[in-house]
Image: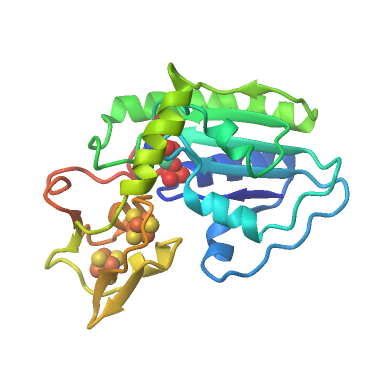
Length: 246
Ligand SMILES: Cc1cc2nc3c(=O)[nH]c(=O)nc-3n(C[C@H](O)[C@H](O)[C@H](O)COP(=O)(O)O)c2cc1C
Ligand code: SF4
Ligand code: SF4
């Protein structure tokens, strides 16, 4: 079984591509996160895969929430994790290993989706990253099928500093106070349905953010009307969703 979390589609694509190659089932963690329903225990001998984006050189908080809902994998079950990232992963997996045993870890470079830091990357770079990922995923799938135990991750320099210092700072400071909607909002509610933390409610037909946000950017990037902005930073920045935009 492969479980994934994905705000803008990169990790969903990686998870589904791997699942197609390994004949694993594939499920969105958000289904469980949004309902607090417990995923089924793994069958003996079943593989477990986790696929998610790197957020501030750590796994997103919702992935750790999901692990609290997941019955622990039985002894002997092969567990692998794949992170997608715009640049480098830092010590994401050392952090994750505090919460679950991992046999193999991989990183896949994908388009950057943190629109608050950078606008959408140029189309040529998006295509280059996705082409490289298309070549890498069959190798990861083959390693998973062979039950390999390996660590193939682009950690970058000063990985511990990024994960433990800057990651901690991000976790403390992240908030939703600057999200707002423009007149383009038609009250469709898509943003509320997308938020993995159920942090958006509709009041008088307009979204209201409730103060429990991880900045995954699903709401802002995927609003069909492009009606969500973050302060003034995003006003002129193009949105990114895999694969529509490349
Ligand atoms: C809040 C936030 C923090 C991020 N931090 C990192 C990071 O530390 N390192 C990195 O390489 N990419 C970082 N990214 C980029 C994403 O990991 C990357 O674009 C990922 O593939 C998005 O996956 P998704 O489409 O499945 O959500 C960050 C993105 C967001 C939204
Ligand atoms: S998804 Fe966009 S248009 Fe729909 S309610 Fe949310 S902000 Fe408004
Ligand atoms: S409010 Fe938006 S950015 Fe924050 S967690 Fe929910 S979907 Fe992600």
